[in-house]
Length: 326
Image (cartoon, rainbow, N blue to C red; front, side, top):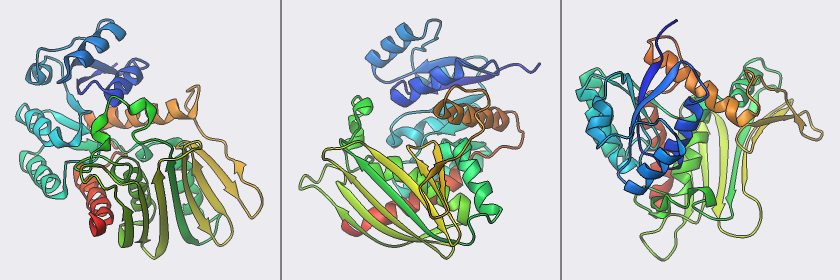
């Protein structure tokens, strides 16, 4: 049996802790070291994950013996910094999105990774989620006919969401907002399903405070001839809503609440069975499928994770949607 893949986790906020939780379910991944800029986050992680080695600083975490890949789960403003540190030690990089704080820095990061020969992957969950794979198979087999339209609908009663309360940078216009944080997953999915998606037009509702992120977005894109309409808003009563719908001329498919897939041939939506690989729910199945891809990536085997260059294409599209009214 191969030795477990060793990970250094940089960033112990919500998303970094999720990485700790999910890797603990596996035998082929091992968190070798971890670190966060915030001392409180380090203390909480050490208390909640017995046996976790929290390094003295990021450099020590990355330099720990047995690290094969550096997972960067920090705000985007420092992604490039930690990617450089990983590259300097000849390690692979697994990064959260957005790739960087803006497109120019993302382009520089992609160039640096390429110049150093550093393999990279970016954590878009629809690269591996069972619902996304099933959706792609149903489109490819022609069972819904020719795709005619894509609808993306997002609503959040509060932004950041309650479980993101510790990540207040998500409120800020410089690097936060639900367009970057959530819509980017669906732009990635549209690109994977249909090819590059070209922004056609967008309208953004910004608050009076120029430091804060968007309140609403309406946007149109062209995905290789398939028109996409995005409506997104934060603020107001009601449950959060996350829906991605592909409408063909013989049927439609819908991702809802991230990980559930339904189908309609003109009548009511019918839930579709998904392969969960033994996981107890579709959310865990999606995370574990992504980690399957991470192991394959680190070991040099075929995998479906996007690289930094692909993430830059997604980021460029997102920033183009936000640009008209910024």
